[in-house]
Image (tube, rainbow, N blue to C red; front, side, top):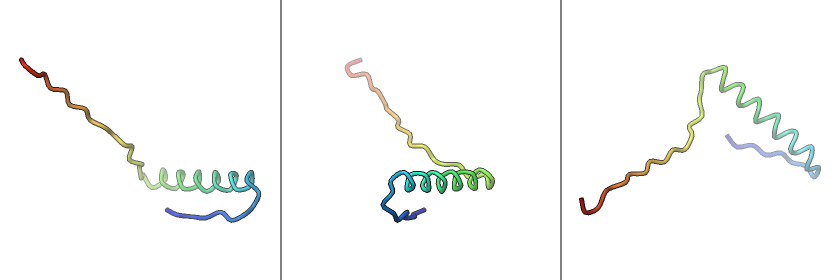
Length: 49
């Protein structure tokens, strides 16, 4: 999802951005869509025995 908020008032920009992001999140929740979270697996090996 890509969107642009055009304007020079930073506080208004942040308010609009937050409103859009919460609306997207709510719509995803209604539809049962989950966000993937990054994961990392670390494997340790024992050297020499």
